[in-house]
Image 1 (cartoon, rainbow, N blue to C red):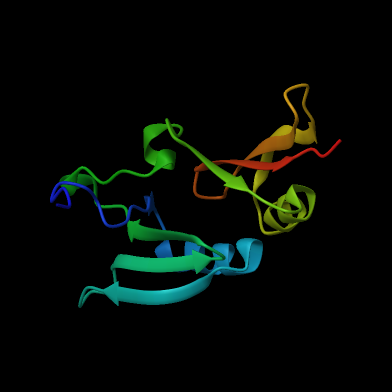
Image 2 (image 1 turned 90 degrees about the vertical axis):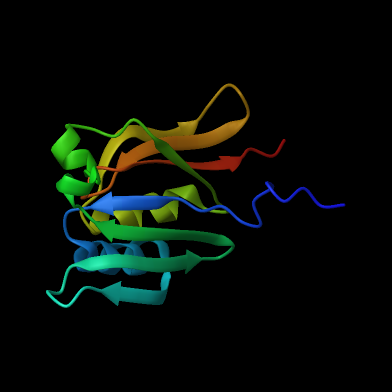
Length: 134
């Protein structure tokens, strides 16, 4: 019998200051496609879902009175999003070209991965990684 408490799926929701700008960033930097976007009558994006390969994630506009605060408001992000990629260098270059900041350069690590960390223009931290082959 299936456990009714087991999630059917899980995906992160990133809180950002400008959801439409974030959608554009992720479309260009990650090749993401917009699956759905819902805005309130005043135009604030309440929810947008994107997908890049098998990775699905969502965005919502910052609403401090609801406790939805972006990393920019918080002064940083306590969460690291990790993407396992075929070419982390190319994705890092696209992200940087779209305004992301390199926090830790992409390079071969002694634990068998090529990886580094970037901060997107909305304050979220991303580890871009690929397995090194012998």
